[in-house]
Length: 358
Image (cartoon, rainbow, N blue to C red):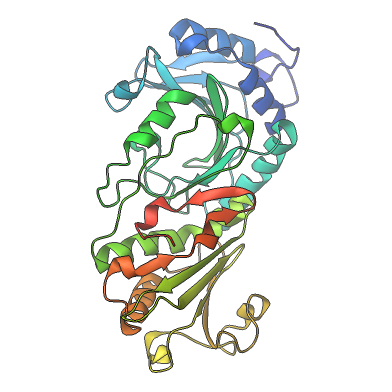
């Protein structure tokens, strides 16, 4: 392996390498099939020392944001590997305050550095409440970006304390995700988007699942809306998501969800539905919505706030109650508009909602 002369604090440097340069070096690393010998050679190439225990190995980086974690193949990983001894090197890249706004801003700053170094990510999305190999996720949101490659992929992931760069063998992580498409409620969470980058040739997509009760819809919609402005802020994208409500006669537009750095929802329910009683307001109560909708169309709307502010469960209960009052008789009658599937050049599937798309 080639040494490029950039050494961290472990080898005497007084200047910490940038996130972009770290990303370049991780992508260039030869993991040699993710064997113990290959990973020790990677650590030496990066100027890091091997530490920790056999169960919880770490690479001592000397970075101010902390040491890197190695993920050995264990019970949850072994069915997805083909000879690998490890499935991740996770490197914390910053340590922001724990609130959602600070975490989202730090993730976006890291994205901008890595994108400047490697180009646009080929995959983006949210892990929802279940990350690769059944890991739990941060409370504020679980955005991720991937620079897919062969045999390895680099991911920028929301970690427990801040954004992390995660180098991983491509096949195990994708095999894990693909196998979650078993059709059971909540079998996949979050959302997943890919672009037309050549790197995505051969990328597989799992099947989804369908919500079978209004309680399931309330839970999945609440999880989605509660984290959405933090995740869109972190990813640097804007999502426009219409919902249509199928009644006895047709499936008219029912809600319009718009989210960039704030979550705004407009309602188009029939006039005979008492929307004020259900919790909807007007532009007078929600002046921030004037930048998204005109003053009088739709009349009824809500401004749910920015990162960390939306009350996901309460919003979901309001939307479900409104849909049912508008004549939507079953969960499959609440339909995500196909327009929502196109986000800044990515084709997105909202796996975690369990709702049909049309």
